[in-house]
Length: 283
Length: 294
Image: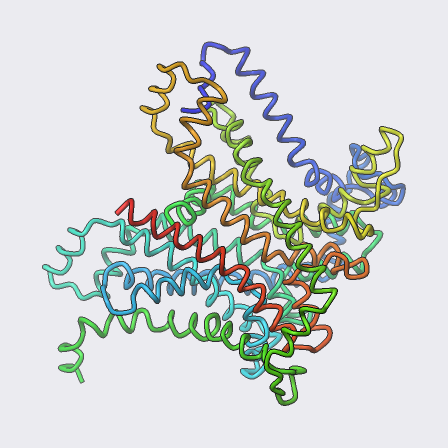
């Protein structure tokens, strides 16, 4: 290991080390901590311009109820769920199918198809913005959930295909040979043999896709307009403009918007990190 | 029908499997991107007929001062973002110890990575606020007055890029932590036997083993810097006086606010050409790595 591990016998060193790391961590997360503290501050303190000290009075419940009752945040939150969950499901299905075919079948143009999936994933959103927006308007999907769901499934499928292909091609060949010798069709092989082995990969991909889609801002402002469909990112930015001086409410809304991805991350941390590094490192 | 199916099943199934993905990705991502290039040769308000202007939009770009500002700002973003790999490596080296309690600390370091850019923008809005922000407090502690970063046309791009740097550093840190996990113990041990320590060990034994991860970290960072949009949209809206636009944001502005879709498409095309150079470089690296491991 590098750096050299601090010996378990050097208890003092260990304590000093952990406290130093904790100190760096506080500095690292200071901006976020301030927002969390502001989200439980009373109006009076916010009005007096106190943002960085410890709150004298805690208004956690008041602030968060106010966000739900006085702003459209609950609606935005719901919208984000309605957009994100089907997108994740769609991406998992398509990526598994694509990954299976691209890793187990040789056909003409396979490399080109794969390169397009991977390369398309790196394109900046702006290069497809005008035609995608146009397409959604023509299909009558502009400013509906479907526009965002459809786009996110299409776009995330690029990265997800790369991800699943790597996983499936790492499975042993014998598995597929024995499935074939027992007369299993490709569909049966995929469903009964491959998918059960892919559970960790699917979990990792699900949480990554969830985070990407939930956090999207660009497509939210390009493809939606009304509060009834706007996801939480675009909603939060509007809220910030409307509630300029009520920073404690904006802070509470900010924390709410960040909560689902952060919670998902802590629940499935191992999968998340594995997914991110496999996606990037195994390339 | 069923006999046809039985005879051709072996190739029909994979085709049917991959078709939905190819059709969706092909139309929504690939075809749309190509269409943008086509639009860039036209004058178009988004509703009326497209008017062919050939390279007109590109010629106009050459003399557009706003375009020059965007290009310059993209370079600033790139310069700031290239701090992410070394900083991420430094954090990873700091955190790479297996002591009780480190797991939790480590995962708390990852948090910026899962925050939405809008959240990061809001958070850094607080940091930069010239009267209440933490930056103002630091300046006050030294008896100075904090600059209003987001309304200073020379500093605003740096302010936005440094806000976006936060999650980017976290991302690089994750990559390097994974890289450090895969170091060969034999090589490290051999290095120790040869008396390599600290900096020399890092330089001659550790870093050579991190080239692949480092390459990915740099590539992802470069691409991230070039396609920066969210932070500009959320924190500055390109202001003050258009001083913080980047190519991605200028494109959005020209299309959505000014209804100059052809011109916007031209900006997007230029952005992609610049990025393509890096993407090709990245993909070539990946393919080489794959060939080596295969």
